Image 1: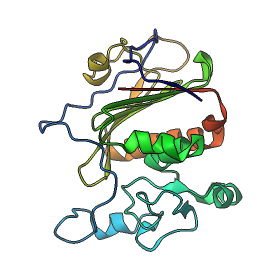
Image 2: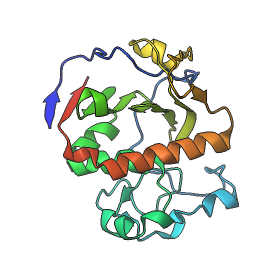
Image 3: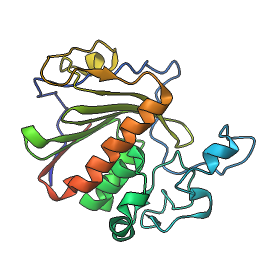
Image 4: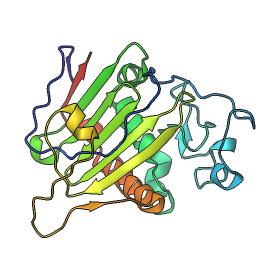
Length: 230
C-alpha cells in the first residue's frame, strides 16, 4: 500500500457521475460508532431490522475485529465480514456495499479503515489495482463514491453511522471533478450495453449488492493500493 497525503486531483479520463444531491445540512465527519437503537433515534421499520444480515443479534458472517463497527450494529451500518464464513456460504449471503467497503479497507490494515472513519480526515480516496481493473473508494465529508469498471454507487453516511444509498448506475461516464461526479449529468458512450440508472429503491439495492459482491470476490485489498487523504 502506498500512502500519499498530498491534496487529491482526479486523474481519470472516464469517471461515472452520481446524481446525489448535496446535503442541506453542514458537512459532518463520518460517525465512528453507531447510536444505540431505540424508537427515539431510529426510523427503521421492523421489516428493515429483520433483514438477512440479522445484525440486531449478531451474525456469524460479521466479526468484532473493529470495535466501532460491531457485528451487532444495525443493518444500515457498516460491518466487517468474516471472510472464512462468507467463503463457505457465499451463495446464501447478500453483501451490503458498506460491509464490502469496510471489509476491504480493514483487510488493507485496521489503520486504513480508521483513517476512512476518522472525523478529522475530510477527504479519503483509495485506488486499488491498475486502470483497467481499478476499484475506487472515495469519501468527501459524508459523501461516498464507489466505482468499479461499469458499476457505480453514491452513498451518504448519516450522523448516526447509517449508510443511505442515493444512486447506482452502470455504463455511465462523467467529467473528472468532484462537483461533476455528484451533480447527476451522465453520459453514455455507447457499446454493447447502454447506460442504466436505477431510479427505484429496489433496483439501487440490487445494484449496490452486486457491486459489493464484486468487491469482496475480487479481493481488491490484495492489489497494489494508493491512499490519498486531506
